Amino acid sequence: MKTACQGCREGGPLPFEFTMAFHPIIDLQRQVVWGYEALVRGVAGEGAGQILAMVDDVNRYKFDQACRVTAIELARSLFPNTEARLSINFMPNAVYEPAACIRATLDAARRVGFSHRRIMFEFTENERMTDTAHVQRIVAEYRRQGFATAIDDFGAGYAGLNLLASFQPDFIKLDMELIRGIATSTARQVIVGGVIAMARQLDVVVIAEGVETEAELATLRAAGIDLFQGFLFAKPAVAALPPVWWPARQPAAACLDAPVADRVADVAL
Image (cartoon, rainbow, N blue to C red; front, side, top):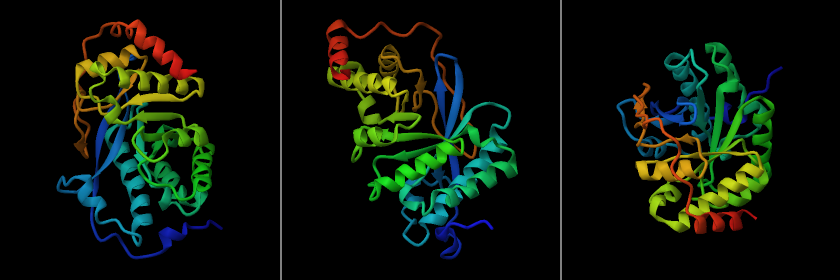
């Protein structure tokens, strides 16, 4: 007999409504939309902050599950006939038991005909994780079930390098604060170059999120990144897919200057 997640059995219905906005992640090397991140929004377009402010200890588990199901249902209706991935944020502290808590996600994917192998789960290092071993079990179970995993906001939170050492997800998403101004910041170029070098050795793919200028894009492309997300390409669209701006097809920008490249190599060692 199937065992339901304890958190999903507790409490009443959610006391608020919400929907999802979709923000593209693009593959510049292949010139395709690689996937869409589902972002919480109010049904009248309210920002994520207003919705998340209503999430508490009583409804956190139902909310986390409802976000997954809503994202999958909308993704199936918006981009059913592509290989584009769906990226869903989840709360590690809102998962009681990994195998039970993932069941609603699997059931929703089967019901609407959206392959679960197109789904990526992001967890942010901005959320303090009180039980690292529990998060390891979540990531292991999700990968066993065929989902991809990613650390979001890498470089901004509590323990980015420790998380990378503990979990080795499929992807890491560089925090936008590392991206902002990288075209003119040697320090940011060295740090990002070091992260890319470490990720390659760990077989982890780097996604640059929060890209807003063509100068940032050129610098990141020169560093070897192919997957991008940010307002430069599109803004999130509520329950819809936004139009995507594509840069002119051209080779990646010139490599980092030699002194910076040397320092990046030193960081990676």
